[in-house]
Length: 81
Image (cartoon, rainbow, N blue to C red; front, side, top):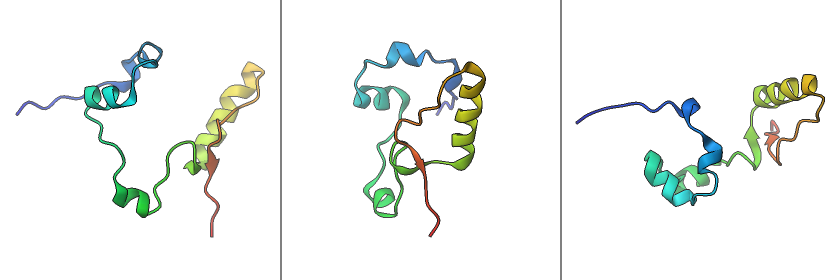
């Protein structure tokens, strides 16, 4: 068995953006989120709780010097209960 790694930062994601998700999952050997994970409360990146406080702050910090408002595209930090 040959093991390898893939540099996800070296991929041109815009080139792949129009391809179907299932095709990309097969290409990168990424499984869909399991029902067990969803039932346990795991959310996607654009659902409430799908972004960390750090990610939100980093996005805002990057947008500010560029003179634009940060848009999390609906992702919010999970509320603590």
